[in-house]
Amino acid sequence: MSEIWTIGSLLKWTEGYFNDNGIETARLDAEVLLGHVLGKERIYLYIHFDQPLQQDELAAFKACIKKRVQRMPVAYIVGRKEFMGLDFQVNEYTLVPRPDTEILVEAAIERLKAIKKENGIIADIGTGSGAICLSVLHYLPETRAVTVDISEEALAVAKANAEALEVSNRIEFLQGDMLKPVKDRRFSAILSNPPYIPDADIEALEPEVKVYEPMGALAGGTDGLDFYRQLTGASGELIEDGGFLAMEIGIGQAEDLLSLAEQAGCWQKTEVVKDLAGIERVVVLWK
Ligand code: SAM
Ligand code: GLN
Image (cartoon, rainbow, N blue to C red; front, side, top):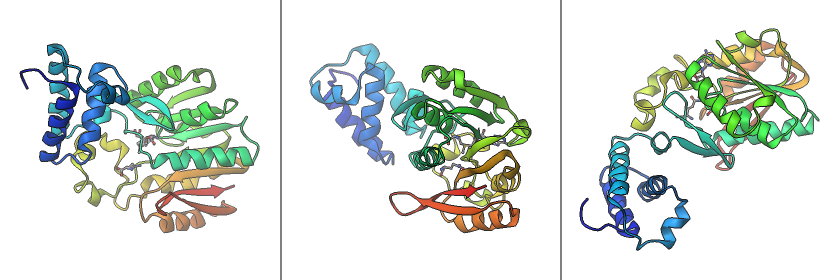
């Protein structure tokens, strides 16, 4: 990378280089990274294809390219990820919020409205960047939340995101193990995207996930259901009558979840919510 590079020629070159290195979303990644280095939206790149890059911009972009071909997720390189139309800070201590998880947030918002609990209090167990509960608080301006994570580093990120989204006055952060920090509380709803990948599947994950994302955010025990056992078993007592527990699930886990719910014996009604591709993504258990 010497001579004069323009935005257009640099994007083209980087797309090819990423493709050669097995990066699936080569063009998109090149654009997001260059936009990040230049401090511009992607659309800017398209209307300034002929703009030459300065040496310091080139150097910064080169550093990004290097990280990406080592398979570091783009979100960690740029330190942010868009989720539910909002901007979330992320780092190596937080899972990168997934589009799949928007199904959980949308399902929760819809149901909180339906039961007229927009002014209620929710819990988010295993909050990571805070993507789930902070989105709910943003879209439901009267809802309050208690959020739990075992990782102090993740909670620090969630707190920063709460500040940036201006919802800090409606949220409480508790560090601890699953439901333990909230065992004496009552909620309109409990939401969770717990670690759910079965131990045996960890090895086959993409390097972006396996190498860079926190293992404590992914590994769900031998059958992937460890955290669901706790949630379905113990959260019943913490949810008001007429409230619900909504959990994101991995592909093919719905049936297991429904039998865990049945064993718990405290749930009145169950729902499985599919994503746009028809994949079962969320299980809702009603108290
Ligand atoms: N809610 C975020 C999201 O959807 O993007 C993060 C979900 S990530 C799959 C699971 C989160 O649970 C991680 O932030 C991890 O630190 C947290 N976690 C793992 N074990 C936990 C435990 N025993 N108690 C509380 N949180 C835990
Ligand atoms: N959806 C994540 C993945 O497939 C897993 C997140 C989780 O365990 N909750 O990598």
